Length: 431
Ligand code: PLP
Image 1: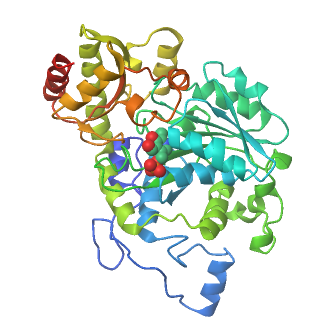
Image 2: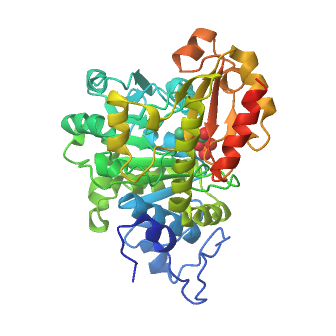
Image 3: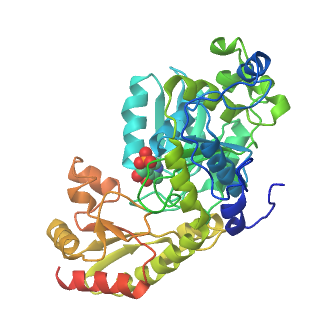
């Protein structure tokens, strides 16, 4: 019997897997196998024809990945999920599942740099146009739409600006026009539930908070099962017209007996089959270990971040602190409406008087914090974007993306808050 609960703490430990049939193993086994023996020729034929769901080959499905997928789908309130090799693979597949050459999608300008490159360059080279709009005005999404627009895309809590995206507003505009909102919720698992706010699809870089221990790259896409792809048939030819590569299957019709999972099934049996960014079972196992403590860790991350943000706000060498807990007005309203799971996330941006040199000196003085290009680890992390992630950009483009020369980004870990603050305090003394 699957465990039913509305509490993420319980689902994180029990959803999707209880014990392994046969061995009664309580931990999710690592199924390190490429393939699965068919019971008969009829069984094999049924699996290939999708008359029955089951394991064929680990590029397309794997029981360890399946436990990960079911657990995350349950925690998000979605109908099904797909594990992928990285967060980058997850965002790429979300677009390729709906767009063909000549199509476009509308995306927030506030994106992780890797996603920006993917959208502005690699997808453009494939004939898919990303239309970038400023998320401070949700109506900008509506204005950018035409008949070839296939999706809206955004991040819940994009750094470095750390302005919470207006998920409910843009999802509602999309639903009026027949356009699904895909949300990258990497920075806000547990605390934000995009599917409940009207998003159709949610995705993660599992590399960050979900795995949580900085050991494994991974990604996942969750289908909300809440978007009527058939009602907007002309907008979604990949889901509503015969698929030549799958003996003419029309995905919205073919999967009807299995539930509202056309989007995620097509992503698995077409994109994963053909492009193959499969998650390894070992990485799925690692991320599952992380998920079991994810709600607990998020609580500690968020509490520590609030204390750290207040400390920085009151420090004389800090000219500006960016954290949703310190925002007011419209940005605070957006944060409060999105973060129904408690907390304001654990990414903090702040600016030091003294520009690039001050940023450099601060980073070099840190002892507890790691200086890395990552977020969402149990450990506290820091980076100075002007000399690293944003160093290729012209100074005016750095500023437009929210990075001043003295800007520092912190990803607050789960250490004791006194130790986090003590490290920041001693490093600020040396600036
Ligand atoms: N989305 C966000 C918000 C990220 O921060 C990252 C990585 O930093 C990614 C996607 C890409 O994930 P991955 O590094 O797992 O490919």
